[in-house]
Image 1 (cartoon, rainbow, N blue to C red):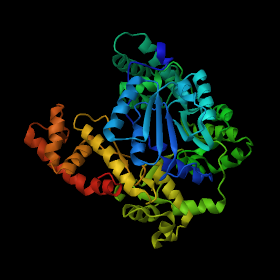
Image 2 (cartoon, rainbow, N blue to C red):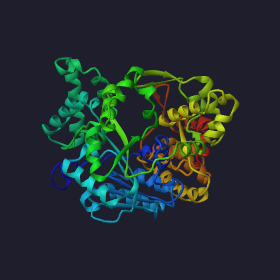
Image 3 (cartoon, rainbow, N blue to C red):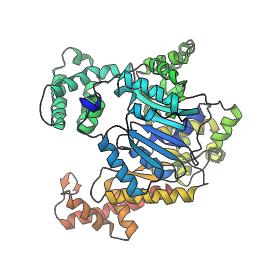
Image 4 (tube, helix red, strand yellow):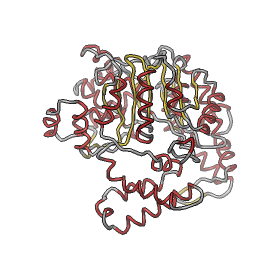
Amino acid sequence: MQGWTEGYVGGIGYIHAFYRELSPSLLSLALTLRGWRSPMDPSGSFACAEIGCGHGVSSAVLAGCHPDARFEAVDFNPGHIAGARRLAAEAGLSNAAFLEESFADYARSEAKDLDVVTLHGVWSWVSAENRAILVDLLKRRLKPGGLVFVSYNALPGTLAYMPMRRILVEHCADRTGPLPERIEEAVAFASRLTALNAGWFAQADALPGRLDSLRRKSPNYIAHEYLNRDWTAFYHADVARELAGAKLDFAGPAVPMEQMDELSLPPDALPLLAEARDPAYRETLRDLLTNRAFRRDLFVKGAERLTAAERRERLRATRFTLLVPPDDLPDVILAPVGRVPLPPDLHGPLAEALAAGTPALADLAALPALARHGEEAVLRALMILTSLALAAPVLPEAGLAARTLQADRFNAAVLERNRRSDALDTLASPILGSGVAVSRLEALFLLAQRSGADPAATAWEALSADGLALSRDGGRLDGDEANLAELRARFDRFTRLRLPVLRRLGVA
């Protein structure tokens, strides 16, 4: 944690991950819902910078979906950038630049040439000095009307985990040896302390669940999430006031569900919130009432407000599609207010319509089975499904041919990589303008279909080369024939249940 890393954890790479909340279509939807004019046409030309991009997977996937847009992905870890550039070269991404630069280096340009800047997993994990540089960067580089996405550990929800984070940091520092081994030891030690149920541990009701979650995480994730020297949780008001130095105003939560008060707060809390005059104070009160631990916020730089008529027109024209088979929709969801049922007479017909194509909100609201609920109820159902990654907004048809060509090149590179590794699990959808997660097995099936090869044989060749085998009924399958038979059965299920969805999304 010394030298060029400036307190940020080094010596271990971050996980390869795609973050769908950075997708232009989702960002624009969230802004429109709040009545703001988006600085970008998700199907056209815009410039987006991802600051602190890690391995650059999000920017690479989005560049694969948006050939007319320009993406800059910045990270100071040379190992991350080297891998991102290799992926871009394999996928033929001429519209993405992966830059090994510090925040200060990247901020030096005077050109206000960025429509969107995303800061995911950065604000809470860097020093106050680096946050000041980020504010300067946003002041210098973001166009008037531009958008900033920022995520961070939020108070008061994070308070419950701060002592555990301190244990992980101190225990890793107290040991020698490879960092992954020290992390594993630290998590095990924290579990033993929790089992004592003494002192603070007796009050931390959520800690056992948090530790169970950590045991399923890789050392790479834990290192970058918990072990940085400068690890800070924030009240929303403090973040808003820092970003005001770049002339940024809070536009709303990036997740549509978090814009729905009835899912977050009891009815009698709303009058109390209304007493707060300062929007930053009001949002901080909201976090106190929901015990929020993580925020994904949108800030705008002088963006214009939509009229009520413009907002309604844009929302009614927005098309959506389903990301899962209709039968996979849950009956109940968990929200801050508790368990919330999804009415089957609304969500059933909605799911069927979304699974059949890419209808606009206006078309959905006109369907006989949905019209009786009203357009606002249909919109709110779409907000829930979109937030849960069960549905998503769809890009306009204009430009689809160019998007498909670029996405296909990117997906070919990702699928080919799955012969040797499962590190990349996201394909570019020219329909969504976003990523679609696939398992390694699904990727191998798609790879075989592209070349006309036998899917089961292709999958078994890759898996067996890595010393892997399938399981059934809790037991490991031995031998080629048993594994090939299981793979044929799984391919049959894949073609019946999953493949129709992937084809509708343009990735198969």
